[in-house]
Length: 393
Image 1 (tube, rainbow, N blue to C red):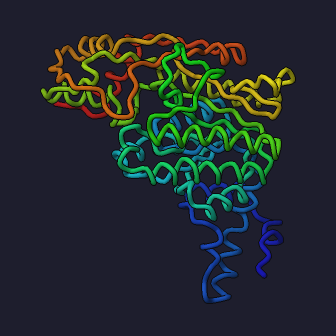
Image 2 (cartoon, helix red, strand yellow; image 1 turned 120 degrees about the vertical axis):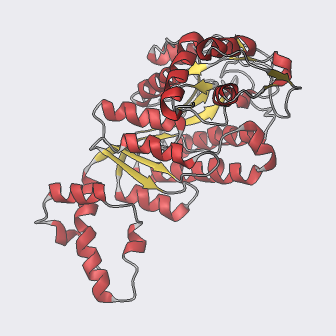
């Protein structure tokens, strides 16, 4: 048996931190696995200060840190002085270079560490939680996209269901103070009772993506009930802004319009969306992160409320609360680009819904959540970023 901890008594924590920040992530069990006992001992001495440093720092885990929202959340927490560990597998679902560009910004902070790891990797996730002290967890890693889920359902179960289970297990065994995780407005599915409210129906999803996200809400409830793990789910409504995903409408429209190509407008332009600027989303996430879910003393099992529980579990909408017609959204983009879009009108796609509208009363009452960014302002900020980042000719 290799004893690591006695090796660290006279190590310089500063040197340990410097080494740890410079090193690429390598699961410790794999690092120590070598046929030569002498090599194993040398490696044990090398990484001993890293283990001590990891376990001595209370940090926040952000899964999906190379992703759109995860990047913005991690950056906000770091700017506030938190120590953050980011996890991402750099899935090639979209441009990996964009993901690395996001993470490179985060690596400018001394208190940030990036771990390349797939959250569906059970052993890797267990080791991650064993070698760090995560007081709070923001779980944003997921396989996103309604349309992609139709042809690739297994990807969604692996990332969203299995991955979330691994996060729940890690939080359970390390007694995390609070888990905040991403859900989606897509869980409302076939419902047309708007504004969508977390106390209403969310049991008729129209795509496997939505079904997996609804499953994560129910899994979180079982862990809150069985293990008293405080969990809060946030149902995101059409998030957009700088550093966004290339598969989302604003990004696609901008790229095509600048290239002189037509843009696909589904449902013949009759969609309405509760477009929510990313900074408003981040504000809500950070506020709720520091307010762990608590049991609802007024919960009545004879008339159960779907958005609260006698367990420390909550679900909230996080959106703008003001749906905007898709054609108005496109018009704002046309103004910012000074380009008139060539619109290809198409029927509604399978698994899609005609409109979304978030009731954000719950999050307002909980943490005084008040979205501040209009669509006009948000689209302009996105365009400014896009032109600066891509520098199209």
